[in-house]
Length: 302
Image (tube, rainbow, N blue to C red; front, side):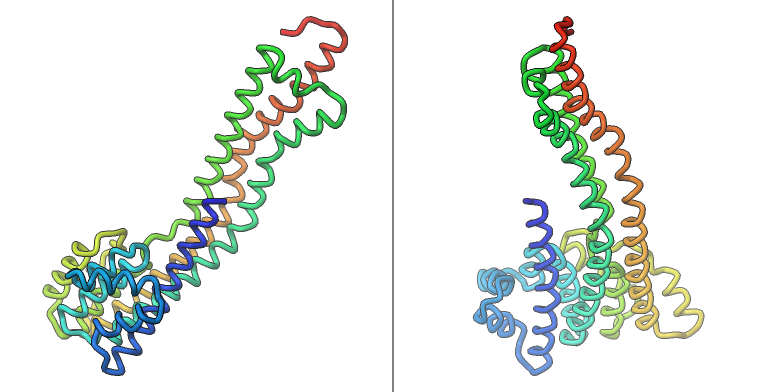
């Protein structure tokens, strides 16, 4: 339950980051200064804006204050820093980043929908050992007495509980890995496009993007853009549009890969089922029932 709450909170924060970035873009486009825009948002009750405004009042630069919120805010902070340094229009930059985050969020939502069925099946199968214990009691077997009343039963109980815990942890890890999101796909190309949009050279743009990443630590997209820049030079095509097309392609690939991982999860979840859940079912359900029958016939228990 705690994991579900944390994931729901994370999704809410990501949606808030995109919405706040878009609101900021509107205010900045209307001529409101950056500091005043954050102040207005803070006064309206936006929790993220409150923290940014308070940190900025204490002397922290806006990119640093934004990055301190964590999550997708790190991408907003990096884009803000790049646009500020190269003189790119901040309102347009925030609109582009908000659109990228919403696209990434839609892809992540599709993956979560695809993950829902196999994850729910894994949780349901995890209750099988406990169902076996309850079934033995309902059928009249002395399951609890066997599990707690003999050394062999206690060993079965300990091993069964350990296998249940292992299965749950294994399932959770598989689901978590299949749904990993990290930073916005294509953010590296998007940041470089923002820098070049400010009219600086490619070398200068790269330096600015690298500096922004250093100032806003986190999990950034590290895909290479060398081929795109080389194509731009050889074909005489503006690198900005090529980079943005690359960013869109990376988000599309992330969407497809996420759905593939979700589809593969169903077969991968069979591993903890066979290795942990079914043996726990035998240890906590079948074995105690057998021992209960043996004890009722006055045979010597192990």
